[in-house]
Image (cartoon, rainbow, N blue to C red; front, side, top):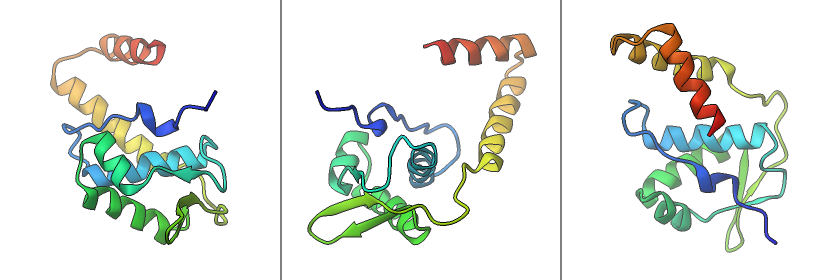
Length: 128
């Protein structure tokens, strides 16, 4: 049985204020940094991912181009896009993750939620 693609459960958050291509880039780099994708693994084609996520081909292409520029992936003409050998110093960008969490907390607080309410939502999501 084929293993499920780590991107298959990815959902874009159009209310986050973060551009779609950045969300996609961040998710792929996270999957690589956490070894959900390993060196040599083939990523979905730009066209397939655009169709699967119901977004523009250009949006996926922009994310892939940025990931390639940063050394996360490599494209082989006619063969596909693959996870590259990890460049030195690649780690999960915890600073970025903290910014997203800060934004989430701020949004929750602005909605009038208490700390207990916020923690309950996070726990419920983690359990799903």
